[in-house]
Length: 81
Image 1 (cartoon, rainbow, N blue to C red):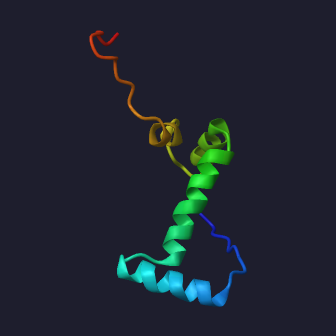
Image 2 (cartoon, helix red, strand yellow):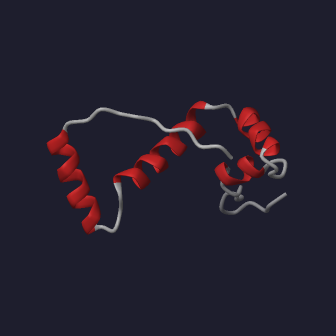
């Protein structure tokens, strides 16, 4: 898949502090931003569109659906259907 770059302006001193503290946790600003953008994509883009894009990339039908939906569990005291 072809990648695109996103540029965001941010205060230089704040960014330096953010890099310092993330580094202590073994994280990077870029990695954390990728995670945040992926969460935003999942929140904003309808499931059927995400599924269509997965299929276009060669994924399997329902791949994105499986990633975002937790397994359904029967309430206590009830039998699973």
